[in-house]
Each structure stands twice: as structure tokens, then as C-alpha cells.
Image 1 (cartoon, rainbow, N blue to C red):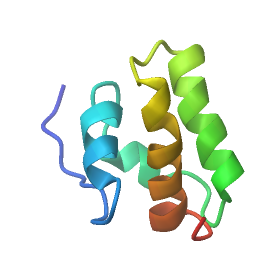
Image 2: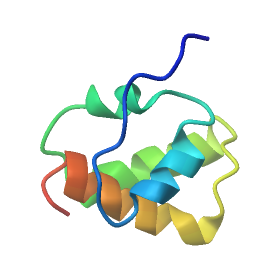
Image 3: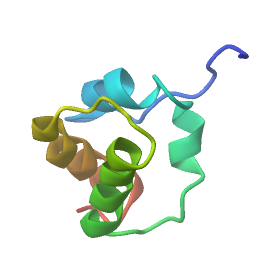
Image 4: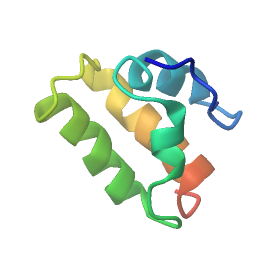
Length: 77
């Protein structure tokens, strides 16, 4: 795979996103999601990554990651 060029926006939770999300896909994948989506969208996406794609995200990290994604890339959560 090519070297990672994207990075997550700084903020509370970015370290969890970095640890959990880039195991399977680049940070760029997050930035191409539809803008302005609410927390419910991001939580469903994180849960889908775990349940459908087998991401090894601990249950107690789903909400913090979703909250970070909503704040950084969505409607502010």
C-alpha cells in the first residue's frame, strides 16, 4: 500500500481514530464522507466497521471515536 498522506484533524479523540481507523483504511477515507453528518451517522459508521468489516475496536471506544468524528468532520456532534 502507498504511504499514508492524510492525517486526522487534531482534537480530543483523534488519537483513538488514528489507532483504530488506519489499521484498515487511510485517514483520507474519513475526509471523503458526506460533510455535516450528525453523531448518529458517525456512530453507525464506526459500528459498521466493527460488525460488518471486523474492525477490532473495543466497545468502549466506539462512542469516543464517533464523537470525535462528528466534531471534526460532521455537524459538531
